[in-house]
Image 1 (tube, helix red, strand yellow):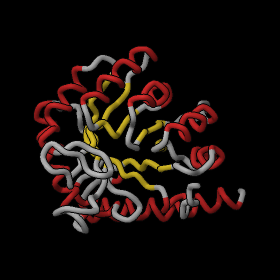
Image 2 (cartoon, helix red, strand yellow):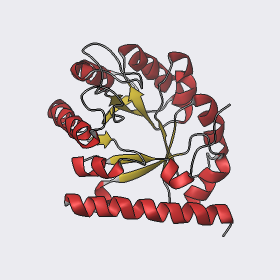
Image 3 (cartoon, one colour):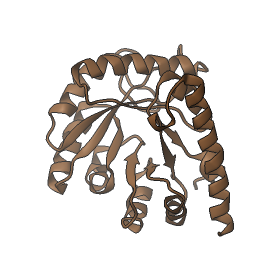
Image 4 (cartoon, one colour):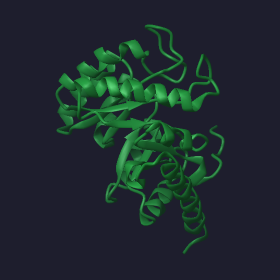
Length: 239
């Protein structure tokens, strides 16, 4: 085993133990939570090592990095998640490799994704990204729709050809009433998820929690956690 593979294996084991312990504390089965490894800024060689170690879900946040990486790893049994703010001029590229777009936050993006998915002959899973720090009708700095926009956006995704409404995503807010209150933020997301499932029963996915707060997300009920640094190490600075 290479040094890098051994490093990743050790880090994965620690993260796995954290998730398992959080599930036990929450009275949940371990298989209720899926680990997504966020591979942004790391090379395709790391993605290959992760796949060898059993990782099946990876995430990227910049198309210019993700597209060549996904192409280089196209032979691997991976589900690719796009988690960054997505501009409509990148949609055609993202629709070519992503299986799930977690950052759907406006109607124009829904329309663009639908057209691109249909042209590519693919079905894209979509999560509505919720900005819990957004004022009504506005979006937070990290992207996302205000909670009162959820119903309209969800209905648009559900009705759009080539798209599948899978659920919700959020990032713990850095400002506003939920700043520093990750557990409360994720519990609020679960309330919104319950509301969503009343109209869209199949939209059961809740993506929340990262390296620093995955335990709070699992406790609240998240189905997917997005972990980067805790698996891959401190990220290199982008030039």
